[in-house]
Image (tube, rainbow, N blue to C red; front, side):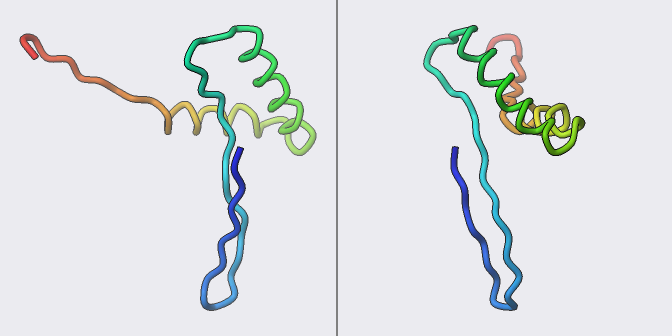
Length: 71
């Protein structure tokens, strides 16, 4: 997890950052725990947050690979 504080010259400020699970191998129990915990936190603010944030993360961290014959 990382958290950042941003501030512009005009005094505008905000916090940013993120969290992810990037193991070298998949531990299904750990991944399940991670997502349930994040969903619980999101649900405490808005029940739609988790699905929306997860979709954004899945899109951002997706690595589409176009395979061409002979490449």
